[in-house]
Length: 390
Image (cartoon, rainbow, N blue to C red):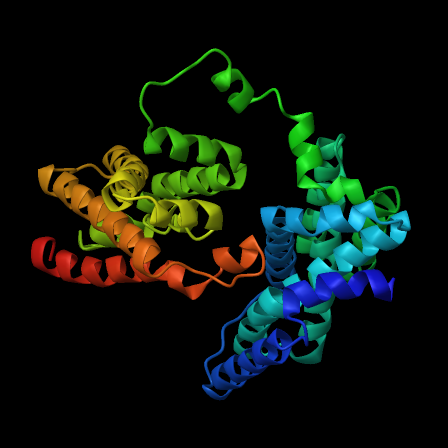
């Protein structure tokens, strides 16, 4: 198993595992800096465990869904291999990457602020393992995903309810063992993205391509198809639209309308739409190689992000009108301003500062650069709110 694990680990952490010490040092510095600040918040045991488990499971799912794995996994599957060793080597490598580079950062923040000590660290470790195994087990299933999803949901609810009670350890162990049982019946092809795509080949693209010829190219058509092909982007977009509907519930308690621009800035955080060039190196190479692509690519891309942002802002204003009332023309103009500025900033960052040298797509999703545009929008929200809504 060690022989099969090493290629995956070197891909994720570097040939000499040079990425791991640097990441752990950052986690240690962050933990110590927050700990000596003396600031503490009370975090319930159930909330702490659920946060770690859900976050780890989500990042693990992103790692498993990374199309960059298609470059390495097929070569491994062409060689003679033991089915179970392959499954557990692949899961262990991505699980180690998820926990050490992402969950460890979350634990550093939670443990330093909540002062939970060794018991919190142990609970975080167990919940992280549960999230990794649950995501891998669910991803490996081609059928019966709804049944296994129900199992994971029940166990997650049990973790939340058990909290610091004596039932916590048995519940987490039961979740880990049940996921291990599912993985025992999986094989390497269960994690192959091209296998899953082949089973769903009769979807949007096949039906859209049959018998249809277009006289002109269209970047908007390409972007829409790209979004449909990457359903995790659609899920993120749908989540932001749900946030847009829910934000007025929290903002209506504020006495000032200065929270309106802040809401628009928050809704510009749909970062997967702002990294479409970074996450597709062949597209970036083609765009930069062909002449006249600054206008042919950037303008439709900017319009696409603008429409997505404006949809979220419109839902926010609609929800505000239904719950609070008082929506006026000034709010609509502000929504247009923030939607356009956010789109322009995202496109300029992608064109001049694309993210490169990432290992898998999950690195790209959590890269600090993708938060630059929302941060600029938050700063602008403070100024706009003070001037026009103060």
